[in-house]
Length: 363
Image (cartoon, rainbow, N blue to C red; front, side):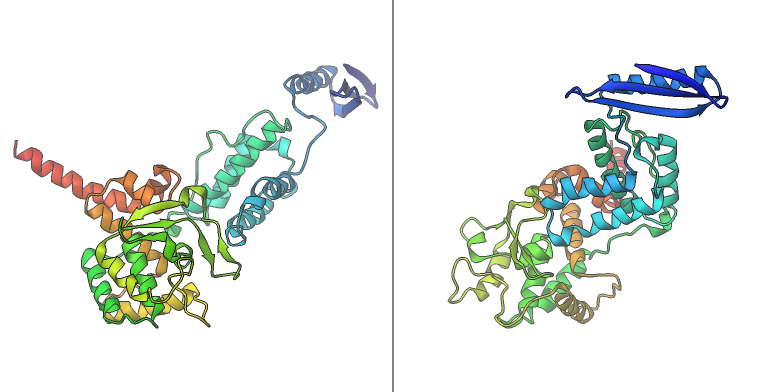
């Protein structure tokens, strides 16, 4: 029910309603120049009530976003995975300040994305947009708003900040494998870790979390079902996502190399475990750079995760299907793989297009 009154030359609208428990609520707004404007406001408010919108709730968007993260995301993340979300919370606070959730329009959100994109790469902008979009869907489900202001928004980003992953050519991979293999010894665990990344494409935490019962020498497979927390020293941890749990095929050469470490160990022992030493990825990175130099490979931005990229580039160059690569990497779907490795895929597509043209010319 709506009531209208005129005070000091201005009109005020007051809307009253009862919730599901029968409790009376009222919301009013004053300062309208005409009664028609006050009626329009009341009609819009009643329309929102009819759609189930909680008109009494009007949180600051940054506060709601942070609460959404703590409720729906934080309990399901490892400590090392929370960084991107906490960074996004800071970005939302900077972009929206004390702006109320209900007052954000698609235009206002597009302007915020445009501003954010001036100093961020496409992938970073896409991540923030994804987080906010999920938060907005929750706000709609909560009945706080009834429209998705992220819908149809175009990503804006700084192309100069785009990051092209470093990877090795087939010849460089072979040269790296040789210098690392020549330096193998049971005490040189980093060398085995580097080879494992080359042959499996697994993440660092997944590799150092492998135990001997994850390896099936007869079936020539490795099962990745956990990680090792090398940052916060919490021991075994879940994989990055449930989709990261996977069994991958490996070759005999690789199995024969890691078998050198299998002496007097228990099935549940970690494969790459040297007593009295904790392997940080920085330590392995230092060894990797040493081997790259020995192999005559000069790549300044190359690091351990680049071995995963090199694994993908090699498989693509050999014509391995993208779906198979996606499953091998432990991605939830092919979209993640294609977005992450769009640079590679475009490169090999150009080569394929040239090959297709050559084949068609022979018709």
